[in-house]
Length: 236
Image (cartoon, rainbow, N blue to C red):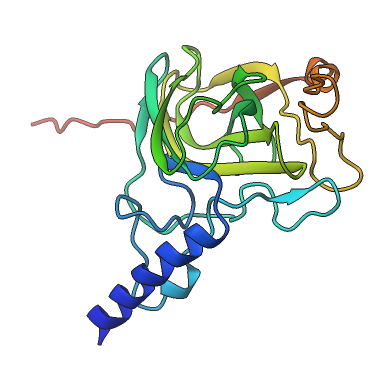
């Protein structure tokens, strides 16, 4: 029975992803993602799998999901990224909306505060083929502190509805033992009526929201050092 239920759910996942799909992380795995390489749900958790993981969080008219969509992942092994490493992230692409502007941000407090670690404005994802797995290099800052972290990919599309996309993955950073990471806070545009509106670029003379990205506030996040375990040697 469990095999039949699992197979049925996987089949339904393909339908759901095609029904309302755009772009999300595939690696590192998005929270509650339906991909085979993701942490797998327990026996009573299959109804928690997000088969619509590629969909936007909302539009400028309304918010449908919180940032990251989900507050946690299923238990399992998290990918480990070294400070200074360039990671080959993989995006699951349905349609690319003629690109847009991407931000990648890290949080060490489960999304309370974010710091942007990489930007790609105007044509981010524009060269991603439809219905593909698309590789995007991401460099972890060399001074990134060690610890569990959340990696957030944030995207405002150029064409179509005025939407915001966010795909979050739980990762582990290996870097300095404690320290600070400085940058700017991410822009969450086209995310409810009170957020900045970035119009369709092709319709409004190429306006891609530069004024809003330039106005992102500076931020510094601090991660406390972890106490090292003391080692005791026995004396004879």
